[in-house]
Image 1 (spheres, one colour):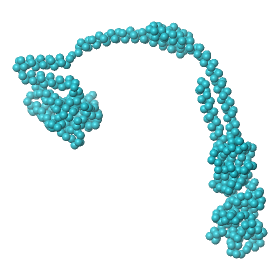
Image 2 (image 1 turned 135 degrees about the vertical axis):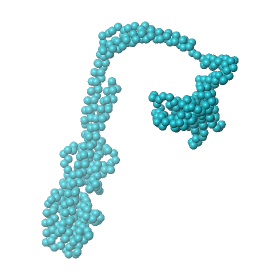
Image 3 (image 1 turned 135 degrees about the horizontal axis):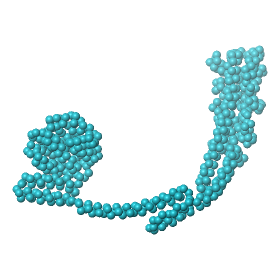
Image 4 (image 1 turned 180 degrees about the horizontal axis):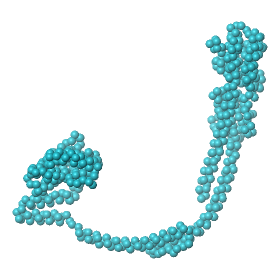
Length: 556
């Protein structure tokens, strides 16, 4: 129980801890995504407002005039100032927008300050490279309370050539986000593409915090979860640092609850175990003593006890078992006695096959003595027929084609007692195939079928032919058994073929049983590698049955 409680407690603690940590991390990621989206929105607002100024018709016209070499008059500059002020009024974060001609001479405000005196020349070059996109400069070197950005003004009527520049001054408070949800130990830092801080409540050097591949960083011996977002629009990096302890503050309480629950569970288990063991073990001990006596040979009943239903059922089952065992002992004794007597009678009733052969041999010599030579030959043929069918243990289930043909000849000799000289047998087996092994009695049932239903249903001579020849398949032989008897109509042939496909004999009578048995034996001995029997017959013309066997195939 302690192991179970320990496993459950550790598993629960790990799962809940992981759940708390994952939820906290997802919440931090959501905050980072929202903050990054808010900053991108503010940046795009500045981009939109300054783009409106850069594409304003009056701004375009005045800068084109400057580009053509005609300086703007004071009245034009004053009128342009009113236009820019109107557009700028819709932008909360933009403190001022200054307009400079291509030669960096100031047009607005109304003085002659040069752009090169305010910013480095590299920013002008970058604005030219960006061809009208907003270029973020960073903190204003003249006043640290502002950020600077620059945009090149492309003249739309002059194939978007450089007409001048806009210098935008933005209040640092414009990008300040609501950080009331952050604790005192939680930090949010935003830096531009040049690692210059834009937003930061971290008072120390921030250069070592960026580019961290780990999920945590250590600050003042405190672990922080590091969550970073890089904006695709601004190229700025947002980092949120959250103390790990702040995320795990509920885990210590969870650990205490699990430990206390485990202690209470163990205490309850011990009390219940003592109580239950007292109720259960006493009747079991008594039943065990009774069963031990049974093992010594004394099958006695166990007295009934007052206990739980399960123990009473166990005791009742044992008593029933004792009764059944005693009854079975008596039954087994009587059955063994009966079986011994039956085996003795069976042994006495067994007939040795040699008795049958000795009897036929005695009959043969009796016929010889009486000069019944023809009947004597039939007896010899019958004796050999039986010997081939029920003996030959050394041969087993497999014989050569030559042995099968000899057996068929002996069978024909006996059949000629009935049909006389009108029954003829023709065998065509090349000598090279005579030693090919086949299952015993594979061909003879088909010959028997041909005699009984060919010659038997025909008046006059009947020829039964057995032909064995090479198949188109290089490793097979074709066996054909045919007669010129009465034959069958096509309906009967179709039924036989259907029975061969279904391997069924339940509704089949007459010659079909032998055919189906041979077909089944073909599939059994050769594992369905052959097609089986092929039957062809015409009424009044005879019947032909063909099948294939492997050369030297089968079980040896």
